[in-house]
Image (cartoon, rainbow, N blue to C red; front, top):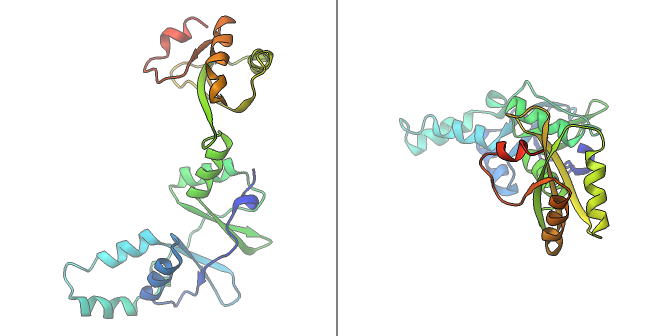
Length: 224
C-alpha cells in the first residue's frame, strides 16, 4: 500500500499571516488536527497542529485576563508558531515507510509532495487504519501465534497445513522475538469458526502455537 492511495486530498490550508484565533476556529470547525500553511503560490511553508495551538493558547492564560489574552492572540499569527522544518513524503512512499518516518521523528502527520506541489497529507490515524485493515481487524476472525525459526520454507509449510484443512487464511504478519534472535512470531488470522481446527492441525505437525497471551515464550521456543 502506498501513501497516494490513502492520503487526504481535500486539504485545508491557511496563509502564514493568518491570526491564531482564526486558525483555531478553522481546526474546530473542520474537526481536523493539522493545518497546512502555504504561501501565495500555494507552496508549502509550514504546518500547525491542534497541539501547537493548545500549547500557545494556555501558556499566558495564568497571568492574563480573558480580554488581554484574546487581544494578544489576535496579534499572533500562524507564522510565529508553525513548524517550518517539515518532513514530507511522496505519493509513492509505502505506508510502512511513512510510519517509520513518523515514529522516528515523533510526528503525527506528513505532508505529501509531488513535483514540488502539495498534493495531500497523511496522519498516524490513516496509517493505523491501513494496519488494522491489513491484519483483518473488524472481520469475524480469530488470531493465533506460531513460533518459527527464521529459515527458508517455514511459511510454505504452515500455509500448506492450513490449506489441507480447507481453511482460509485472512492475514499473516510476522515480527522477530527481540530476546530470541532467529525466532519469529507468525501472527495468523483465520475465520473464527476455523481457528481451533487450524491450531490443532499445526500443533499436530509439531509447531508451537497459542491463541492467548503468554508472558514467557522461552519454554515454547526450546521446543522448536
